[in-house]
Image (cartoon, rainbow, N blue to C red; front, side, top):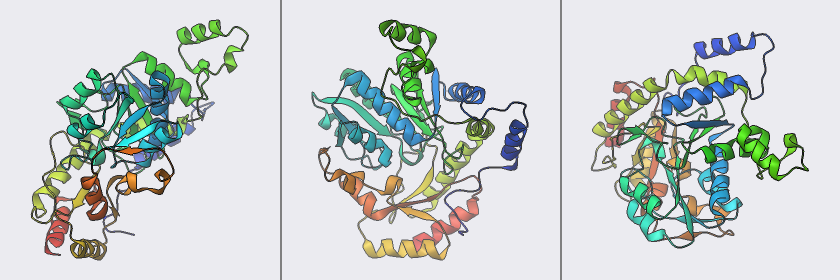
Length: 387
């Protein structure tokens, strides 16, 4: 047990009571039904998008979005970040496309505008932008680059619920976006995720990919069109796309509906914690010049200013002495381009990945959650400064 874990126990008594009330409803249904639909609607309202599709994880949402990208654009190259999660890269690889890695901006840990520009070729079909650790990774120029080059912009917001760009919540700017409701994130459905979009065609694809590719998941208009094109097939068992089984359950949706009411508070508390953290850490030893505006900080970044292995070891010892849980390498364990699954699979690296490598070797994060106090954060920062 840690005095400072990565996440507090974020399933409350009121959450449990909501689940009990639901279980006591007559003829309760556990598989995807009305509460899944209700969560999708309420999440869309909160985020400000037209459509949301509830799936069984944020990683599943990555697979669905990449599958839609392939339906729309075919095979090609996808510009991806080295700092993110394996599920940002694995679907690109497994679906026969080519991930193209570019380095990140040290101030928000997202792939930078200039590096994206250098990676675009006539084979490029999309950009995966990860809003890492709760920072806004977007710039107006990235949005413009995607539009001018007819590239599909995908936003991975799994660590960044409530972060904003120009005052609008992220997840609204790409053709599609995803969020994770894993136990360690801003709110939880234990396991769960959401695909979000303002595009009706993407929405129809997402529903079909979620459920085996069956057209009965789609709107009546789409069902009728595809059924008319395939008159010899049973419409109940017509598979329009090579889909998956990534549905979620009523249990998870009921929990999500209860948790959603706490999200705004969680976003504000996490942002306040980050401010105290960055204001107290020694900027001569640790990176503190992150882009603070619009953040919804998933965790508290701790990255050495310079390459200093002895100091990094002392930092780890300090965290252990203070019983603080941490993860080396920040999001996803550091530079994904150094992982063994890529060694025998097609990929490209454009430019150096110096910043991603520095984060991999000399960076980590500690948990950020609503139970932390200002005094707790200051005390740990002072211990880290002294180490």
